[in-house]
Image 1 (cartoon, helix red, strand yellow):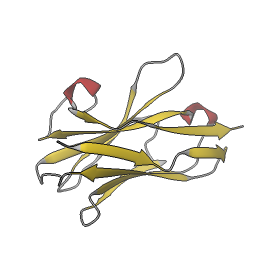
Image 2 (cartoon, helix red, strand yellow):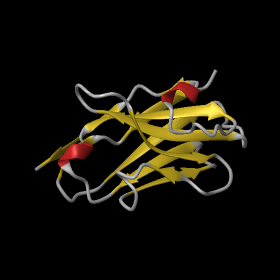
Image 3 (cartoon, rainbow, N blue to C red):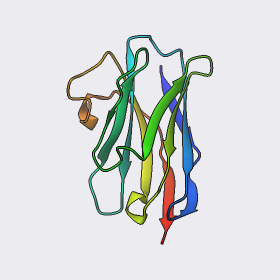
Length: 125
């Protein structure tokens, strides 16, 4: 059974940075793909970014392109989300998600089998 545990959330001022971590228990298959989503109060869960565990070419939502970066450390079995130039509208609970294989609907939460518990990110104005 794969488990995902996020950490790194917190309170930051507008323009600041945070780096979220998602530790994967159970070795991630080289064929896995990982993603980050977020959910603000009163809103639906929103896709942020996704990538294959192996290889490159991550995908990003337009709202975070150029500000957020997804990366992974194979040795640590960890996926990261580096968030720069944060804005108040980035305030949300951030979730790590995973699945075996890559799905062309990578932006849909429905294609992911594994989810973390979420970590709160609050950006003050």
